[in-house]
Amino acid sequence: MVFAKAFEDAKTTAVKQGKKIEIEIPKTAAPVNIEPEQIPMMYRAQVQGRCNLQFAGDNKDLNRWTEEWVYPKDDKSPTYQYPEPPLGLHGEIYRIKVKFPFRLFSNCGQDNIARPIMGKNGIPFLPGSSVKGLFRRACSDEKALKYCGDKDNLNPGILRFMGAYPLGNWAKQINDIVHPQQERQVQGKGSPKAFALISLSQPELIFEFSSSSPEVDWQDVERILLSALQQGVGGKTSSGYGMGGNFPGKPRITPAYPISFELKNTGVSSLLRTGEPEFRPNLFKATLRGHVSRLLAGVCPDQEAVNKETNRLFGHTAEPSQVQFLWQSKPEDFDTGGKNTTYTTQGVLYVNTPRGDVDFIENVLRFAFVMGGFGKSWRRVWHKQFYPSYQKLEIGCHWESPDIDEIQTRQDLNKFLESLFDLSCDRLGSKPPKPLNWKEAWNPERVAVYSNVVTESAAVILFHDDVFKTTPAIGGRNPNDKKPTSVSSVWHRMLPIAGNQYLEIVTVFHGDRTPWKYQQEDNQLHKFIQKLTDKGLQLTWGTAPAESRRLIR
Image (cartoon, rainbow, N blue to C red; front, side, top):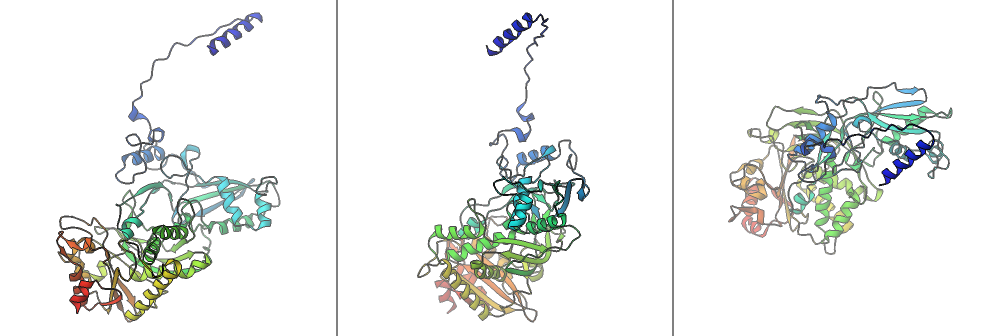
């Protein structure tokens, strides 16, 4: 109706002006039949059955979504890439190249998957506003006003922030996986989880700035940007994403963090969804978060208080992390020759934390190193070194550090664990300290630590006993399971000490007796502890289960 009236009005006006009207009315177009499966994943409803991206298991939707985004012409590399432009000042534009040693993550806040903002031709980029905020944080008040302007934008600065974009094949290993395992491993609840996100692997980014002012000191801009990069770029920086950015060919900046440890490790490698191996520095934060939960749950019966303090330190959906990790290492050496891909790595772990938390976090780091290590398979010793006759699979890991050597004897271990328990009580403990009913709550009434000084492992063979390896609390599986289906209640560590010896440590959680049943009838707890004592390991901290104490006497 509205269109018809407008057409008649235009026609009347044209006739009055003596104009000839020639209007061709198009014929009604034939209906277009679109098959639902022809619609690209990016434009489908994000629901089960149409395009479900979040599940990181066998997800054909996510694979197709990625392929359509990155390789629209079925090439083996992204169709659209940026070549390296002239660096430094080029006209009014100043370009700086930055290399990141791990991953870079930014979230556009769209879809039901965490993915970066996409610019022209689908290439991810960091917006200028994000770079400006990062830059401002590293400026003095005077330089922030000069370069960035005031925060109300009433007096603009002399610098324009044009954002940052990746060079070359930006799609290399973009699919990433996050494994939240704390509830399952620490509390003994829930099932394995994995969520997908999009992040850039070891990208090279070009940061662009421009200015028409002769007052810009571009070398000063470079210094400020390099300083800003040490605080991290993008999201998940507390886990190591977007950290360690540096200018290629120039010395790396060593952060002035209050905690640092040199570490060396051999172990089983994590794998990307593509099957490619990758050492993931976010394993340090994941390990420490789990241990803080264990330690606090061992002294405080208030689950809400335990979660609140853990979230304060390591972040949550409603608050950022107070603890930040940066891993600086040499390139990892991967070995794909066995049934599991393995790796060796050596570097320095830097940890930043508020002043009041330094002592606690540093001791939790030592606890993680002493009792097992970090990352995949940390509950078991490195079998290639300590049980070389076992050839089926690569199992375990082995961490060393010249900076953590104060524990040399059983007495040293007892003193350290007592001190850490007192620290946990001072932080959140009830009076008297009572534990939560969690599988791995760290309380002497629920855990027993056995140890002995050895030159080779005495206990590793127990984990391959036909009965023990099919007892869920020890081997993580039942007799009919082909592989572990649950998290073991036993940790095993060969801690290097002086004289080419080791302090062999076996940690036994016995607060929950259910997983210690073999074939739902015979409890293996006291038998396992008897085997440990037969092999010379002695109770070092905690409390032996009642039946085990009677058996030992």
